[in-house]
Amino acid sequence: MHWQDAIRWNADGLVPAIAQDAATHRVLTLAWMNRESLTLTEKTREVHYWSRSRGQLWRKGEKSGHVQRVREIRLDCDRDAILLLVEQVGGIACHTGRERCFYRRLDDGGWHTVEPVLEDPKTVYGHE
Amino acid sequence: MHWQDAIRWNADGLVPAIAQDAATHRVLTLAWMNRESLTLTEKTREVHYWSRSRGQLWRKGEKSGHVQRVREIRLDCDRDAILLLVEQVGGIACHTGRERCFYRRLDDGGWHTVEPVLEDPKTVYGHE
Image 1 (cartoon, each protein chain N blue to C red):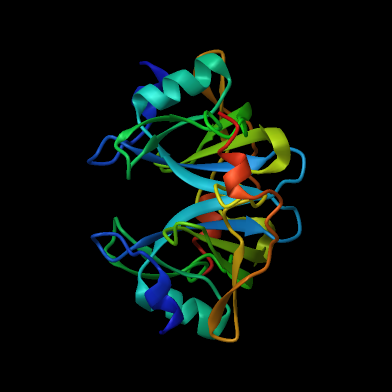
Image 2 (cartoon, rainbow over the protein chains, first blue to last red):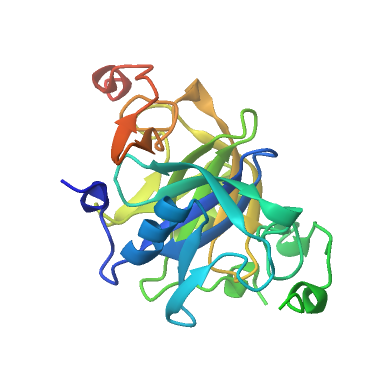
């Protein structure tokens, strides 16, 4: 059996993938993968996702340069979630210019932004 | 606006929630929440999920005693994923008796179990 056939893809042919920074151990991102993105991730050792909003394959960092290099690919007990241990190039995973996407924390009944913008998104996406 | 209204729930009224161990920083689990489970999680400070397979509310550890105590609740940039920083009681998050659900690693074109069973699941679920 091909290793991808062990995965329980959802009705849209996708699986959620968590990216965790191998150095800081911070959880950076949750995004989605289809078979093609996982194939490319495994072969190139650079993380590829499937953008549900754009409906297209997306090599992480293709515009910003903030590539995620793969150290480990893991699968959970239910075979319906992926964990990626990555080296985050540039130290910025989020399109807002923050280290990671989970920058809002629930405190006193509201979401508060608790992490700084490290680079202006206009600059980040001006790399191309 | 109620803080839960900021979340982009999916068509089934669910959002994926990642549980990360606050002490070891390991990613333990990816599970799903509905509004009720998130409300209870916030109020009781113990993680509640929505079991998609059983179609019911599920207090993590209700049978095993392996409760997850909440330290932080975070929301991502797209407002469609939750990150929970938790204290994992008993040091076992997975129903297989392992520390965490992500115990399979992709090596040489196949999934390999790389984490040990810490407690026999029969014992774990014999607590009740």
